[in-house]
Length: 220
Image 1 (cartoon, helix red, strand yellow):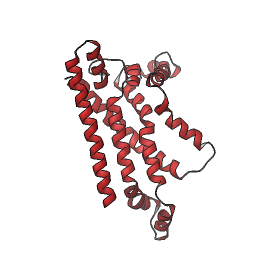
Image 2: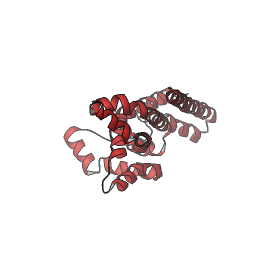
Image 3: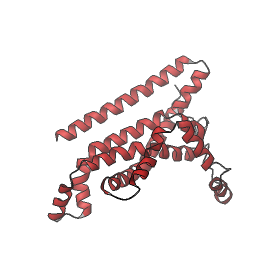
Image 4: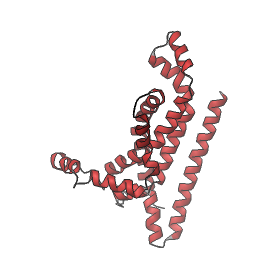
């Protein structure tokens, strides 16, 4: 078992959630309420990581963030900062390819809240912040929880984008998914089987826990 790769994957998933959850809450709610020209195009751009092959997305991220790009060259020259083949590069890539997994469930959850409820809250003297905390968040919680679980599990299992942007550097960019691939390439199927089974169990438990929590929330 490659515990270092598993630890790195868990750290990446947690860091990705820490970055994306506030963004997803704001963007998901805004998209659920906003009406403007070009909204469909923005939603299509958010959905794009779902339909692009991971290697294509990883390639464009590598080209955009690498030392040969204007941004990468400027950051390297001014701050000695690299955005590829390190944990920071993995995090940036993870945030990009997980955007639809966090935004779409949250958007749908807020869209399902009747506008009459928020209007009634305003009539009863609740501020916008109080309405958000006491009315909207509890009602949208099942969708938010689904977004959290989907993002976390998807980060654990992502392979193509991570490999393109981070490579396979032990202890720095070698995630559990890449470690499984490396073991298969080395014909160490026993080790690959153990890691794949662990990833399967973790994903299953996370999704099952999400369903149970959502069901309890809806019953309450």
